Length: 448
Image (cartoon, rainbow, N blue to C red; front, side, top):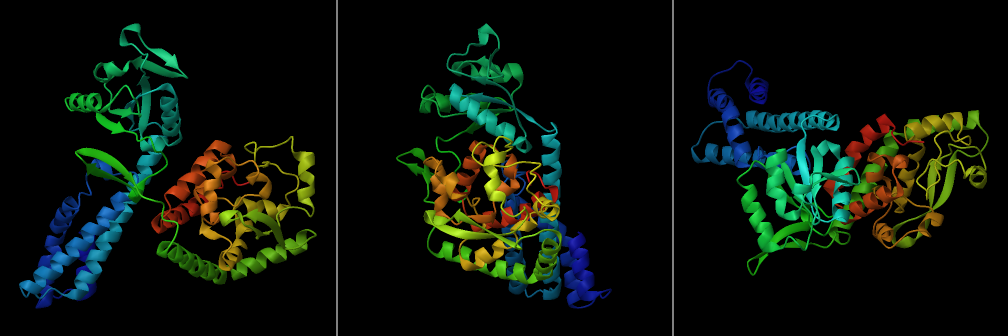
């Protein structure tokens, strides 16, 4: 309604003759048409809400559909609807809808993190898989799944709840339905389990249809999401098809072009900031303005990474002396109150301003705006097989690690996050990370 009102008055003011008359009718119909388009685009279905980009993509698709319908109907019936009204009202309605949904999503995520609006969840499967999923759901509390227990192959409802790593064992694999009724479960998450084969799993799905509980099936392949995964019917079987990660060809060229363009723009916009930081460093401590350090990039090739110097000169040689006071994750050396950091350096690190010179690394082609964290050669010597997957892409100035806690992450979490990025890279994923980086920098979590 707001978009239609603004669109009409921007185009016509208080006129009601000619094209203004038809546009006034269109403005009055627009809220109804908008809701219809959103329903047709399935933007209100709960499975698309609150998490992921699919909700926003469906809003955009529905808005494009409505624009096409309005254009076709006005042309086919020779209606004199002003293009100026349509050009203002529909894009504005799209922006307001996306903004409203984003704000509501953030409010819901904060409430869920605080313990509200939770879905009681039972995990079904073997102990190792149950523990892994439980840990992931705990890390992502904003999804709203509160795990109240699990069903294991050796669990029995008659024995009463027992504990497995602090998680109550509520029953066995053949007692899931009874557990759902007894504990009023909202969600049943089933992990890959040989005891629950096709027929048994299908029967469980039929039984859960009689309750309010929803059924979630976890694939054996983890950390792969989005457009890479699709269900394909083969010989009557629903098979999970996993596409290759999009790391080469036109998409890589597109990422390189976007990186270069945005990095050049950011350099021009932050040039006064560059000069101010350089002056502050020169006048408050001895040493060069820039700090160069060898890092490992794509395909395992080393390069010289640039940063504003935030420590005293010769800080690298002091690591061996300070190694016992390590707040890092066992592989990375980090210290919250590092005596090597200068006064100006503390401010630079708090707001990640020390990383601004890496825009030059992006222009040189050594780094990307978004990617895994650029590792030291000494770190890569301790990498396992999974962690070497990160070398398929360029390291980034920011990435999933930046918006997920940075130095506060455990080593296992760092590995998982880097692999997830490589497996699911896309330009839209990069744009989402860049957007969330702003909030992460302001909060400063893990920045030391």
